[in-house]
Length: 410
Ligand code: FNR
Image 1: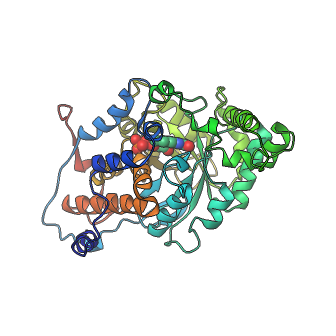
Image 2: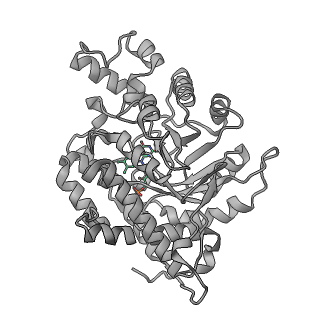
Image 3: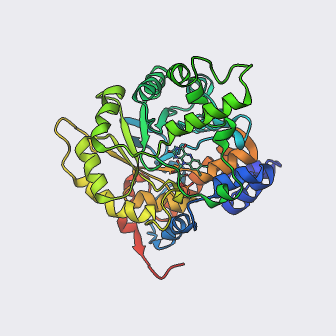
């Protein structure tokens, strides 16, 4: 906070500390289609709105005179077998080139600067090897770490190839997104016939994959200079049908990913919302459960992700571990987090770490790497001040006792 004030006094104003202003700044800098793609959600938008409203129904009860020191607030957290300086995570967001030319690299470098783990989407604008090499991981804060998110291809050979590449490039955690085996009904994109993938965007990982090129492009890379527009369109359509195949996988098929990723390497399932899925994930023995409804972009009229966090977290914490497992799975959460108090509430309701989605996308659109960094720093400072004022000296003090549920709150 002091850094933000002092910078401001010396003429270095933050891009903004308001989410609404940030979104409108971003909107003014990118094509309308790109704005709609990020802001949009499923069908009537009710899940996206419910995600936001759910935070208002949990209200914080502050405690006083407990000798708390803001500068010593302890935000450190251990998740998925590693300690990080704060409980924030970068959620995977595809097609970042439509927001800023430096795309995923700008985001990963910002994340590394502040020691926030970075989740690379399957649907990136930059190949996973390039992000691993140039994404700032070497020089980053202690805690900077790269995770790879999988949109599970229909083709097992392609899946194997992608995971081998991600492992080789040093991605530590595999995040398997379960809720987007087919794309949700997204009116803002449908109304303008916008699909960035059909323009060859967001398929960098697939287009650079040797199995994809060999099996689906007759050995001719769609990235070579002489590739025709028709060839690129056809390769993009094939890539989409792999990333979002329209056929849901089953629980038993997860064994394949375990075998490919390794017995001791962390696997996180992203998109868990129901009790029965949480139990199946525990029985499977995952290292992390990521409670998310994809920012309301998949099922319209769905339960808010925060409500399901409060319903599932105690079950996950108390469920017997799968034989052979020593540590309970980490609980990650996203969908609707916009401020420090949202982070506080999600942690009190049982999340070990909270992932940031749209806010950093707007920061990226507004000001590249510096814009993403500003967003992360703003949310973190807001969180630490809020938590301290509520009477906490660190994450260890947070819990449901600090919240009351008020269904009348708007
Ligand atoms: C996403 N999300 C997402 N998730 C994923 O697993 N792989 C992906 O490639 C993407 N791509 C993506 C693009 C855009 C534009 C958005 C807004 C979201 C979902 C993302 O990881 C996260 O779950 C949500 O963004 C969280 O919701 P909020 O905080 O953005 O409302």
